[in-house]
Length: 404
Image (tube, rainbow, N blue to C red; front, top):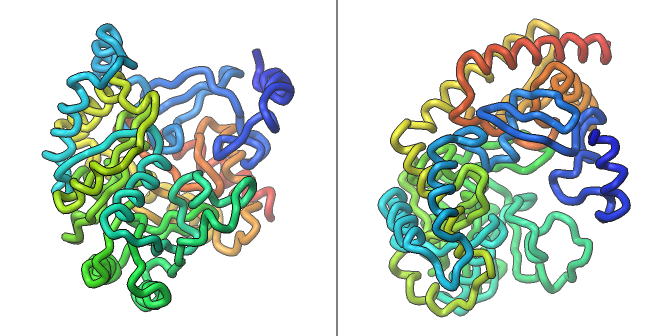
């Protein structure tokens, strides 16, 4: 069955044929919608085309597709049971691993998606403080529930009424936002770096991170780090640990189980009691297979220094793209951590150049994205990056010919 045939069939039984962030209609014209399989740092679409994968399923795949250690752990647990009348022992083992790995974690609660985790973290903060307002950076993505979805369709203004926005990396803006709702701030929620879609990424300024921590303390509010996207790719201990800034609550998901569905909230002892008061649950939140996969993923990243491997591959990719862009007469911006990179073209306000280039990359076997950050995995070897750079170089040449 071809991609075109599947799209036609899907259009009859799925609203719009596809929805959400995986909708290929939002990307360049040549992007496939349906995929057949993945292995290591490669994916194959249903038309049989092979790609070196720099999206890693939009973040979840951190060790490479079908990593043996993760697959073996998942299979062992599946042979015992997955969705049972209660969690398996693996839940306790995974929680212990998170507490041992993350310095700001004294406990862990589990769910399935990043949205679950960010929402749950704010529930804990509100339960702890008895307050309602949440300070959130303008344009930040924290999930797809009504309180945070980037699209207002199907939501009401009341569902976002308790959000007060500030400008990322501006302590003055954050302080001003807090002042507008003085006495009613339950939490400050912030991503570890600015990774809004359609915009260049922006690393956090250490002074801002420290200032956000100090303000939360002064207000008696919870500092919540949304580490859903960056967690386990920047630092296993938490993405702000290098700045010696520890949150009260952290939301995790994406790379946590190498593609298996799981999310978590970790928190400090001071919030353990409020967390116990929540009624927050789901039929599949305690499934054991994903927990086994998560434990194996985190242990493998730890034992193999997987983040360092991603940093080496990401740095080589960034260097190669810079040299290629320069040689073809393009000025590009490469932003974000090298493990979560993105490239934009200078002056490309409508992303037309990025769309053409990413489409050309596809034709040469390289899957990356025109308006969303990319993701490295520990499966990307030096040879894989070199092979990918052959394709991106041809794509730069074709894009130069196209734009003149």
